Image (cartoon, rainbow, N blue to C red):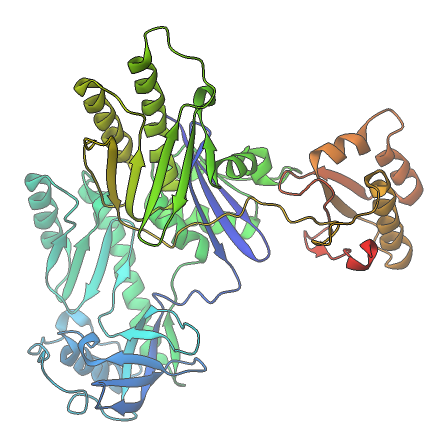
Length: 524
């Protein structure tokens, strides 16, 4: 099986698609204009104590003060504060954490008033971004997340992910980390560390320790509060961190800056695989080039077709997801109804496992498969579903078919549910139901080109249009495109873009910035 990652970097968002044998199996999308604050660390100042809530508000530079509850101070809070005073008392020489003394744990039933004072300086980490009118949520239990490990200062424990089932492997990892981690540091071993060599884990541990040293150095030199002392990795790398697998054959990125970020990250965690990161320079949109746009439009929505005319209907209710399997207009098997039902159901199991990952369908999923009479057929379907779900990173549980032919699946949500609206709004009538004659569409495009070149003096630009329209514009020796170039200059490029509706168009300048040339008044 070949696995590839495709990263589409746009002005407003970044999207990552995971392909297995050219089939889209996972898709993540994040807006770039949102402040990616979770994981960031600040040297802040206690602004106000709230004894009634047993919490306080801390100034970390947001419009709203951040919320810190007493229970989020962490057991080692006293050790942290003592070490922080030692660091801030000497701005020239850094006091090493390995020499710091561990104080007794914080009392679980203590109060915020007896622990903190107004104006006190604290190192905090954001665990929840600001939502609506609320400020960020904070913790004083700092952690540095890596691919295989999570480093926790002032904690001597080594914990191993419960998803690693082998007792021998858990013992090996625990003993290994106990032997290489420095004093006064705790480590959480993540699931992907299973089977990794000591050299790989030690290399990442050194990187995380370096992050800690850089953070505490910034704390020591901070002169103005609040101060950002540790910033999470870039949005792309953060999305990539949990998805990345050294078995990937290629990672394609269409933005040079992000390309270097991703290449540096891969070189850090898997130096021998750094050459798999490639910069995409093609004219077609990157998702169109790898047939991802078409797969997205066919993979989201209520009805999903798969092999031989069969299809799934996926409905979401308040309490659960419901999936109905239909044989459609597929030809009947010569082996009879039972073999035909089994074949349709096995195909549905393959497609459903993909859909669960792709949409991140969480909670309870109930699947109504086509009825089968033989117990061995039902068992074969159950085993196929379990096998398909082994690649799913989310926790899940699958029950065998009930006597009503229903399969029940529970699945943990790894990230917010992915919703991709495949319905296209009419770009020409804006919902009014009346449009200009479509044959005049190319005249509209030419008028826009004329305005760009003659009035705005934009000589070089790219016009993105639907592939069907692009085929019409490019047809013949003396095509429309050639006529436009001869009339307005050869700086005009025409690119077919599958993400656009039939009579939709977009203009881009030489820097890839969209030129807004759409006017609703056209259709009145």
